[in-house]
Length: 214
Image 1 (cartoon, rainbow, N blue to C red):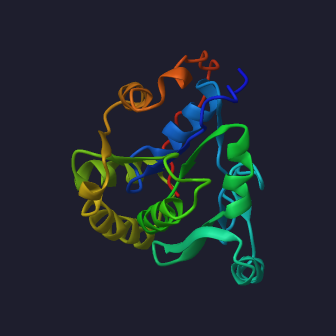
Image 2 (tube, rainbow, N blue to C red):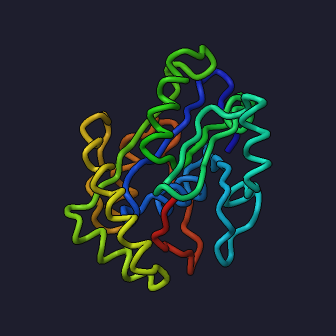
């Protein structure tokens, strides 16, 4: 479905702790809601198995990331889990919002920075939709992370420490989804989208609903 040029486009940002289901929601919106495309952010971490440069993330070396910082190319950037840097390129948002809605995942620091940038940029003002996704408890988040089966005890501890900080910021978000099942979460998110963009496309058979995190 082509975007209606008479209607403003939006940037949907999904925020929340690891294990809340952000990637599942982001991918489903991009795949199933007409008029939305995935915002591809940059990172200095290595690709995980199956991830594709330019599709899942823009994978950069530390030197490449520094060069883009010096060029003032980022709308926002931050260290995530005290380990790797992530950022949103200005061109990835401003240029594409001319013709499509965007959906992406940010950490708390990134969302805060983007909110500030959007308030001072007439090209973004009034077009940002922020949604915080949370689980019912830290134990639920821990169980989901453990179920992935690919996380060291040290990494799990880092993620849980970050989750406590992130959940403390939940009250600063106007839109909050308490995660349940993937279908529950997606239905709740659809209810927050502009009405013209809520006609769902069929889910491809066998599509993955894997929970991952930024």
